[in-house]
Length: 360
Figure 1 (cartoon, rainbow, N blue to C red):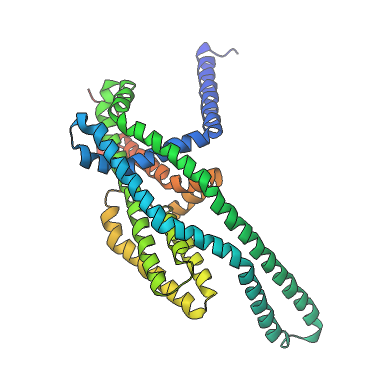
Figure 2 (cartoon, rainbow, N blue to C red):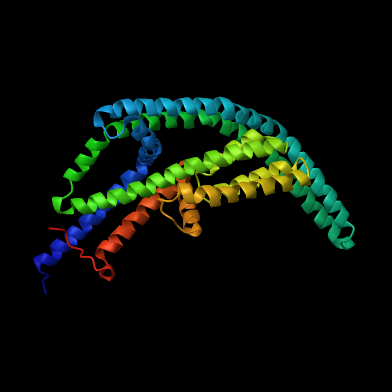
C-alpha cells in the first residue's frame, strides 16, 4: 500500500525543521562567546538606561548627548571604584596568595594535633591505619594550600582579559542604546501587523522584568559590598577589601553568590581565631537580612520572582555551559524564559478567557 504524497510532504517538513533547529543550536553553541558578549552588552544597556533617560528626557534629539553623559558618569564612577576598592582588593589577593601556604601549614598542624589527641582512644591495632590516614590528609591539605595560592594569582592576572571583554561589551551597549528605536522598528517589521499589540505587551513585560532584575542586582551588590567593607574593617578582619569586593560581585549570582561569600569570609576570618569567625558570620548574616528585607522589596519590585531551587539549578547550568559569565547571565535568561512562558500561557489558555487567535 503506497503512502500519499501529503504524508511524505509532512515528514519532509518535520525532518527539515529538526535539521534547521539542530543547525541553529549548533551555531549558537559554537558562537556562544559572541552571544554571551551581546547579552552582557544588553545587560549593561539595561543598567545604564535610567541615566540616559535622566540626561536626555523624552526628546530623541537629546538622546546621543544623554548617552554620552550617562557613560561618562558610569566610567567616572568605575574609575573611582577601581581606585578605592579594586586596588586594595588586588593587594589583599596577592597577600592572601602569599599567606595561603602558611595557613595550610597551620591547618595541617591543627589537624595532626587533634588527631593525636583522639588517637590514644582507639584500639592499638587500628592506630597505624588511622595514623596513615591523618598523614595523607595533612599532605593533601599542604598541596591544596599551594594549589590555591597559584590559582589565586592566576585569577588576579586573568582580570585583564575580563576587563577587555567588559570594555567591548561597553562599546556594544552604546550602539544598542543609540539605535534602540531603529532596532525596535526593524524587529516589528518582521512581525505581522496583527500581532503588534501582543509583541508590544510582551516587550514591555520583558523590559520590566530584566530592568528590575539587572538594576536590583547591581544596587544590592554595591550596598552589600560597601557595608561589608565598613563592617569587616571595624572588626579588624584581614583581607576586608578583598572579601567585600568578592562578595559584592558574587551578589550578581542570586542565592549562590551569598552562600559563597559567607563561606569565604568565615573561612578567612577563622585563621584569626574563633571569635573573628563568629563575628564575621554574624556580620554577613545581618547584612544579608538587611539587603533582603529593606533593599529587596524596593529594587526587585518589577523583577520576575523565581523559586530559589530554580535559581540554583539555572545558575549551575549556566556555569557548566559558559563558566562564570554563564552563571552571571543565567538568571536573566531564565527571567526572559519565564516571561515568555507566562505570556504564552495567558494567551493560549482558555482558563483566562483569552483567544489564541490574532487580533483583527
